[in-house]
Length: 322
Image (cartoon, rainbow, N blue to C red):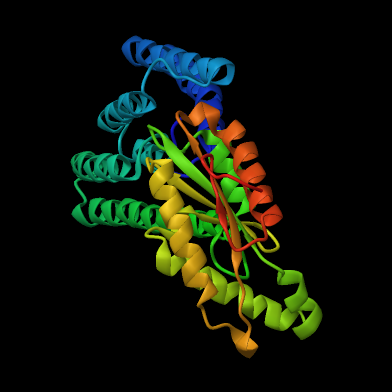
């Protein structure tokens, strides 16, 4: 079931409640001899149940839940017309459900239209303008509150998701983010390149100056990498002093040039305590996203070759030595 919260739990709960509550109304309409309404709601219950079953079994819904939501609303309008203002209070849970069955924009539009129509029907049923006005105001307040609440929750969800995938020290993406990108296959539509980077002799910085200075050095090194890379979003801290750079749709020849620019730029970078550091780089290419795992191994092997060759160098498929 679609929902602006990104989780179908609430939508499934509401569907289950509708399936349990509506049959009570159906029985009542049969007793009152209102057979058209009873048949109408029986069909709706059957369709909601079918959608819920299909979602639980295949994670797909044959009928758009928004369509069913609108059908329920029409039924509610019919109730107000036949049974008076007391039936209008069903519009409140239906409005709330709309924000979990539809996108935020669609739910707002449907809710606003439903509020206006409901207000008109309540006025016709009671003849009391101020009662109808208070009803519209109350339902409108619910819509505004839901919009604010869901937008806030979405923003917090995005911020939390981003924080989880950011390295707390340097601010660049972390290993978790890289692995999730790997699992989802988001490496560009065509050929690209991958770069593994290791800061040379970084352990000596921690041993000589302490971890506080070491952390400062790491932050400045990441700042230096960001100065060369056009998009910092493709820079990942894999752990310790090891980094990865993803270059979607970038041929290996250009990736090697990027690696060289990184190497030269960082070698000249002023670091805390007058420290100077270099990097070793392993570059590899991939033709399709399916090859990325093999590319990881080859890039790591090229990084090892760069270290064996004396560090402060870039190794790639065409490199000799190491």
